[in-house]
Image (tube, rainbow, N blue to C red; front, side, top):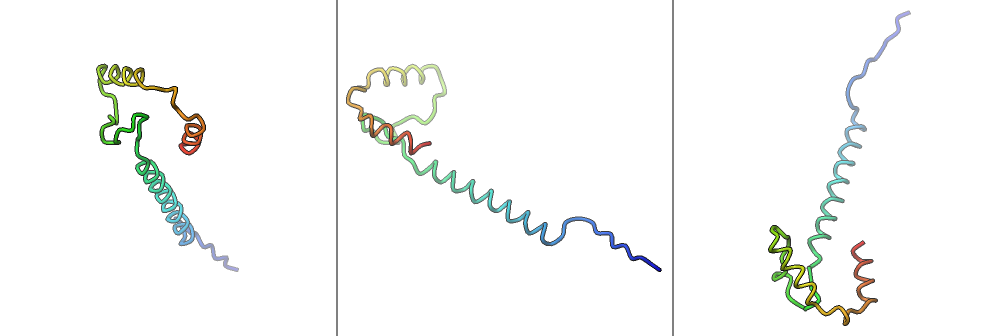
Length: 91
């Protein structure tokens, strides 16, 4: 009696197909997250356009400028229900 042993190596077709689907799913989710992040404009309380808002702080002077702008803003007129809904939308 001869027993035939079939030694298989590597991925099968189904394993390779599953790997491609998983990589595609991760890429799709990543693209959707990046689209959602870039689609939301930055709007300040003063009503300035998003292009006039600095995207990042790169020096101490930028930080001090941002702090003075925030200190000068009127927060008594903030609608708390709108603020709460905006924060929930971000999360």
